[in-house]
Every structure is written in structure tokens, then in C-alpha cells.
Image 1 (tube, rainbow, N blue to C red):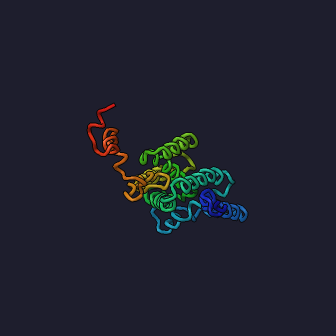
Image 2: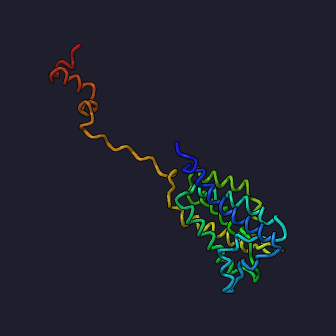
Image 3: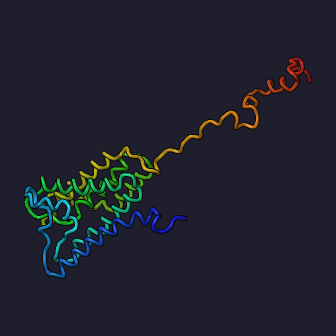
Length: 235
């Protein structure tokens, strides 16, 4: 039996736990100092704002814990589900979503500091959902249904002109998640691999001649009687 550290579940939970721990340490430090780290967010079309592509998902509102709390559960769940069910593409798909969502916000979003992990969350949830569409296997379809059940209300977050909400991050993250699911759709997971067909058993592995099992009843009767055709037609 594999140890806990070698288990698939442990491996799936470890990385999301590290990401959340970093987020919460930054939030506690920010609030403890009475400061705002919003300048580490994405500021569109400004070179200095490019750092936010990497750092902005770690930065949340310094006013209270509501912003980071609302992002923590879906971020953790999204990462853990991808790591557990899509192991072969997990890290590269999450990196793709993280970076491309940030770049998209930097190019297209309104001029303001964009902070928080919600864009990445939308990308992860979109990736899981659209895998069910593109892969068309039972596991992915079931995951898509779970995502619809848990996070269907998130679709409202992509609507424009919502005060205090970076709806551009949500929309771009969702679109990037679709793109990631499409790009990685042909990379088959271990659980999706077909069961290999047993190779044909070699002749010498048979205890008896294979022709013995291919003969008709009449042919076997003739062979047992020494090839005498007449014996096949007598009582």
C-alpha cells in the first residue's frame, strides 16, 4: 500500500494547499500592517503592470477577508480536481490559465489595478467544464455536471459594468479555460487509456494442437476412427 505522501489524493491536495497558504500569509501581513498591496496587481497596458500577471492572484482586498475567502474555496477545489483527474496536463494547463488570463487582462481590461484570483478561478472551472464537452468521456462529463451544480451562479460574474468587480478577469479567465481544454483535449489521461487487447497466444503455448479446437464434430469423429469415412455413417 502506498504511503500517504505517495497517494494520488495527497499529491492533488498539496500544491493547492501551498498556493492558498501563500495567499493567506500575504493577506494577513497586508492587513496586519494596515497597508495595501494593490500595486502588485495588473495595471493594463503599463509595463510596470506586467508583474501583476504573476503576482495579482495572490493579492486581495485589504479591507476585510471577504474577497480572499470567496476565492479560496473554488481555487482550491479547481486546482485539486484538475490535479486529481487530469494529472498529465494539470500543471501545464494551470500555468497556461494563470499566465494567459493575466496577459489577457493586461491587454484588454480597463485602466485600474486588477487584483485577486477570481480570473484564475474562472479559468480552472471553465477548463473542467469544457473538458466534458471536448473529451466526451464519462468521467469528464460527470465532472462537468458537478461544476454546473456547484458554480452555475459564477456565470453572472462575466457580465459587464459591475462596480468593484473585475468582470474582465472573469470573462477572460473563462475564455482561457475553454482554450486550454481544447488545446489539451487529445492528451489522454491514465484512466482514459483503453484496456489493451491480449496478444494472440503463441502456438507453443497451447497444450494441444490449436486445430483440435477448430474441427467440426464430424471431422473429429473421422480422425478418431482412423480416417474411415464409412464409420461416420454407421450407428
